[in-house]
Length: 82
Image 1 (cartoon, rainbow, N blue to C red):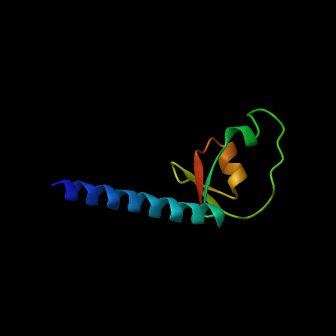
Image 2 (cartoon, helix red, strand yellow):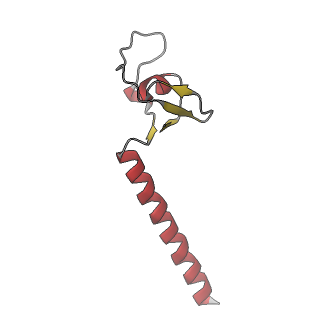
Image 3 (tube, helix red, strand yellow):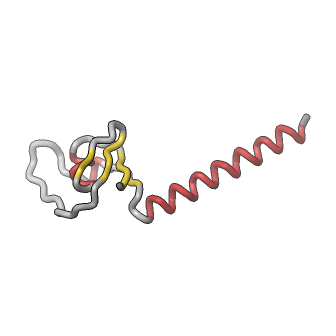
């Protein structure tokens, strides 16, 4: 029985490492991103956003924005590139 639990723990650890590696590659390539509140403008202040047309889907409701800056300004937790 001990070998079964060790095997399960090993497979679980390998799965976590694979998911983390895939996620890291997706973040590096600009497919996924997280919104950090300290890096974006606060509400009711003057903000300047780059005008790039890199459409993203806002997490969690998948509303479409023209770029990640606008999605994060509208209280997104993260974004997914389209």
